[in-house]
Length: 90
Ligand SMILES: [Zn+2]
Image (cartoon, rainbow, N blue to C red; front, side):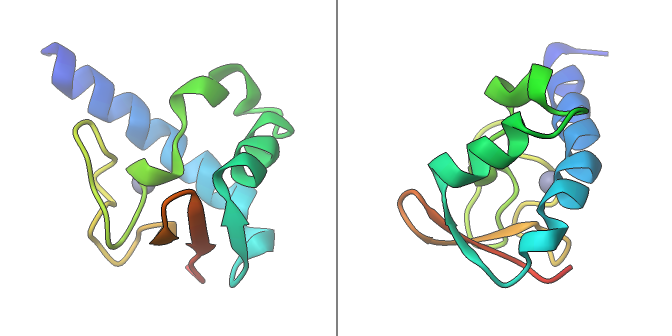
């Protein structure tokens, strides 16, 4: 397994836990800072909080190393503007 696949796999691993953590906030608009606070207060995610970015899980935004949910219907967030995300109802 190459490094890129390993990274994608770990981003994907965070996806389900992040989805669970964000579920109570569905329909809300949150700043990156607020999302980071939610991640940091989630037991299963807090140790990896630095690796978990809302921009990796967006339906309308992607970047290098993004989760494979990005640009797909299972994406967790919709980017509204820089630093502001809508939690999708998924
Ligand atoms: Zn994802």
